[in-house]
Amino acid sequence: MSPPKQVALDTSLLVGLVDSRDIWHPAAIALRDALKGAQPQMVYFDCVISEAINVLARRAKERNRSSESTALLTQLMSQAPEDSIIWISGIQAFLSRDHRLGS
Image (cartoon, rainbow, N blue to C red):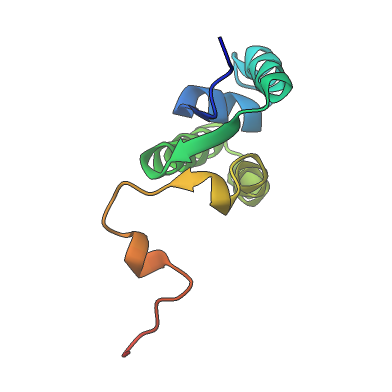
């Protein structure tokens, strides 16, 4: 059986990759590394990105570490680069780089 060409990753994995204090951080790293060995394209649905941002921001606030929010978002963006996001919501056109106000 050949490995999958694409693997959709979920919020728990993404949060675990980004937040080193997450209980699933070691497992998330191990799973990501195992997937890299199989060489599929790792993708995230836009709703996963949205939920991960929400979880990371809420945790930072609850831990009185709001100052870490920017670093966490930067890490999230490195784990889930723009070309790995599959847009399933209608907001894609609005957020696209080609969108011009008033055109």
